[in-house]
Image (cartoon, rainbow, N blue to C red; front, side, top):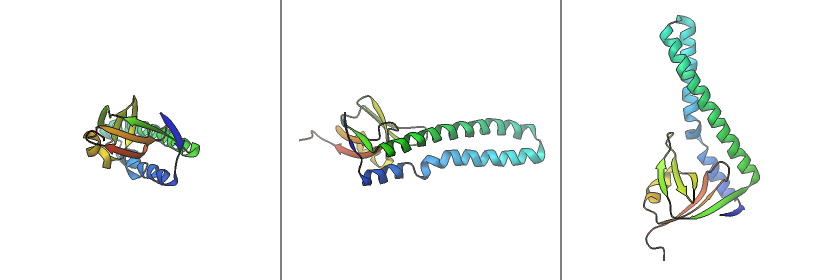
Length: 147
């Protein structure tokens, strides 16, 4: 594993990975919970109270997790260091929230969804990622025998 300083282009790539898709789930769960809270306040329906309890707890949990991930990302950007790993991809898949995940050299790295197809067919990959948040900022894919 190699460490180097991050470039401005890579910072822009990392910021794009933390865009609207990252905040979509917490915002939707929060908005639905707020709507249920208002409906429950006016009707006092026990079913709405139960749904509010379930979805409200889920919304709080999702917000806590996403805020922790964003704090890791912010610390990585402030450090201005990336780790570079080369090797064969061990596994390529998607997370529960729909993000592309690459397993390489024992690390789990979140990669842009644009790379999903080519990573599944890759023989070798070089990926530069933020160390704490594990967000890829540069991905180079090699197919074939790599000569």
